[in-house]
Length: 114
Image 1: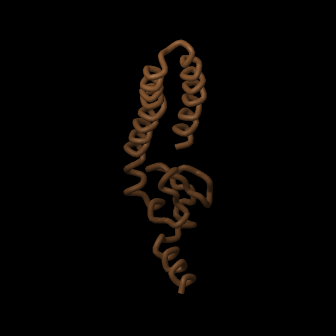
Image 2: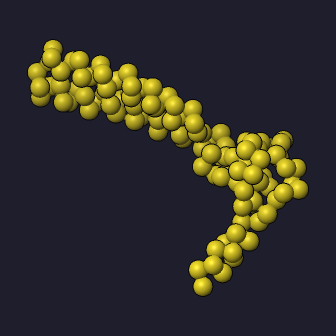
């Protein structure tokens, strides 16, 4: 996930100054249209595509590993927060020893709110 954010920032850092420089060479109305297409085509659309690929690549890990039912698992980054490691189908960071169910966390939160 961090790679997606990094490259989106890099594409933004390159695209925005280039679009800004084009402002002096193009008609203002055409420049706005070109700017919007450039921002969407170079920044937004590739980020969306890479995020979908990230979801597809990690779908099996999120849905079918022991880590995905643990309270220490962050689904958005596919990361074990306790061990700061990315689990895979073959590798569990804690080997199941530090596993705690998500339901336990929900119950603790409900008890605190009462």
